[in-house]
Image (cartoon, rainbow, N blue to C red):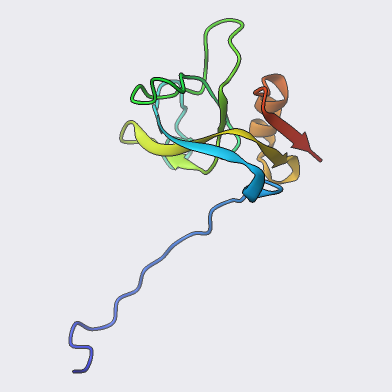
Length: 124
């Protein structure tokens, strides 16, 4: 049979790959909250790839946030951009890996330089 449903067009984007050697990274699934995320000009709240995440690896059913308590160290970084406009979304937190700083947005690189998780190595 021929295609009777017609032609459809899907738009997609390529994920920003921020890791130098993805095969050497350690990443686990998590949820990311929209707490503390500021909406952009388009009204969307996006947690950018490379953003330090705060939370607990033993309580991953509790959403990770982009800010921690005073003096807290982030657990890892957000692996991909996550749209949290409508609330908490699924994502991945990278706890070990080599991050290509040239692929990060300026604001994210600044935040990551100020609070780099223990297992993350920044490569320029």
